[in-house]
Length: 277
Ligand SMILES: Nc1ncnc2c1ncn2[C@@H]1O[C@H](COP(=O)(O)OP(=O)(O)OP(=O)(O)O)[C@@H](O)[C@H]1O
Ligand SMILES: [Mg+2]
Image 1 (cartoon, protein in one colour):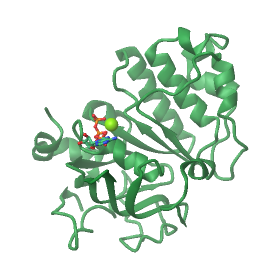
Image 2 (tube, helix red, strand yellow; image 1 turned 90 degrees about the horizontal axis):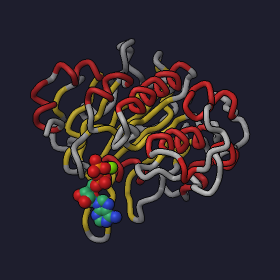
Image 3 (cartoon, protein in one colour; image 1 turned 90 degrees about the vertical axis):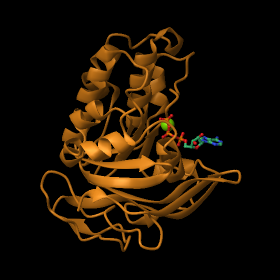
């Protein structure tokens, strides 16, 4: 099922769904977009079909289709400007004009406001860190708190401090006194306080120190172990490969490739066409 997908559009549903992670079990969802079909590798939590997005008059996304199943870590890859952030923002309802279908846990959320989408348990960590710099680590965590959710791991500051040992060392530090990497970690931790079922991380490794990148990878592996699904936007295949089961590759707002992470790593042609700089 992997390979370079053809131009999207009317012919275009090929290749963007179906392959699953290491289990190799093919789900039953296909292209129908019902979003609730249960395959052996887990229920489809997020399903995107025919997504177009626009900034003003410029069309940025063209017929993007992807899905994320329960327990999967899926990488959304592509070079600068490929449309990774726009895809995630469109899913989250943060792009002014978008078309297409976005389903989360079986419900159509294509027309929903972003705060309602978040309340459904779709967590979002934007590219630019968003913490309250005049609040402490613990206070920032409390702001993210939402009620527990059936079928999603439940987080508390204590549990998060196990996942983020460096934050555990500074519970009373003000956001403004933290490094960029620490702020990035806190943004993720605060999002987890909302007990999401699926979390979208927009380039968590970008611009942070190697040590933090390593912790970030360990953290994502930990989330997966806890049963959380992750959609990760990433340019760096080395980082993505550490944590992801599957990958989609974007170029110029179109999905050019989808397959398992292992297949992508083995596919030098796709990597050089769409990823390497
Ligand atoms: N607010 C905006 N207004 C107009 N064009 C935008 C806006 N934001 C992004 N774009 C354009 O949309 C395209 C996709 O951008 P996007 O930020 O989604 O890419 P990306 O894959 O996330 O890149 P990066 O790796 O640099 O974060 C780019 O051509 C970009 O210039
Ligand atoms: Mg981006």
